[in-house]
Length: 161
Image (cartoon, rainbow, N blue to C red; front, side, top):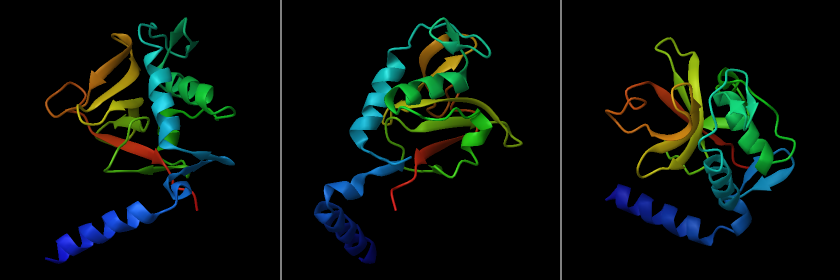
C-alpha cells in the first residue's frame, strides 16, 4: 500500500516540476534529454571507424577518445577523460536507471576500467563503443552477451543543483 502511494506521489511530483528541473549540469550549460539523444546520434555517425589505440579521430579511435570526441562534438569544451577517470569524476554519478547518451564503463574484477561506450538503447541494452575487434560498432550488454558477462557501471551526468 505504501509503495503505491509513494509511486503515485513521485509521478505527480514529476508531472508538476518545471521543465528546467529535468536538466543536468555540464559546465555552465543546462543539459537536456534532447542533448543526450544528440550524443547517441553523433556516436552512431562514427560506426565503421576502425579501432586504433590512442586514436582520436575518424581515421582510427580508441574507446576513451571515442567517448570524448562524441561528447566534445555535442558539448563544446568537454574535457578529455580516460575511462578510469569517469569513475571518480564529480560530474558523473553511477545510475541504475540509464538513459540514452549515458556512459557505460566495463571494469575488471578488481575494478579497473577496461572499456567504455555510450548507451544507445536502454530497453535492448545496447551501447556503441570503439572495440579493438570491430572498431566503432553497437554491441549488447544484455545478460549472457559478451559484454553483459562483464562487470560494468553506467554513469550519468549529475543533476543541476
